[in-house]
Length: 60
Image 1 (cartoon, rainbow, N blue to C red):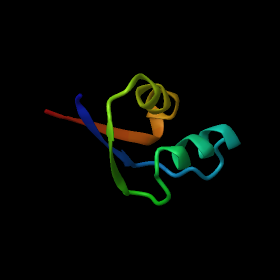
Image 2: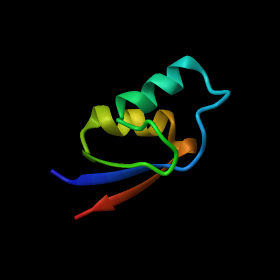
Image 3: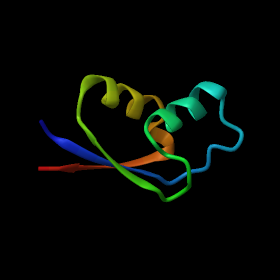
């Protein structure tokens, strides 16, 4: 399965609780932190929900 790298590029300050919890569920706690995940439908859905705060890079 494909992997993706997710980097938080915008702050969670002033965001809704749901968006903050989604960032935590992705493993993102700090700005500019990068985490790697499998590209499953659940992960892709979370990325789409907070995509305006993230930068996503697909790996082969």
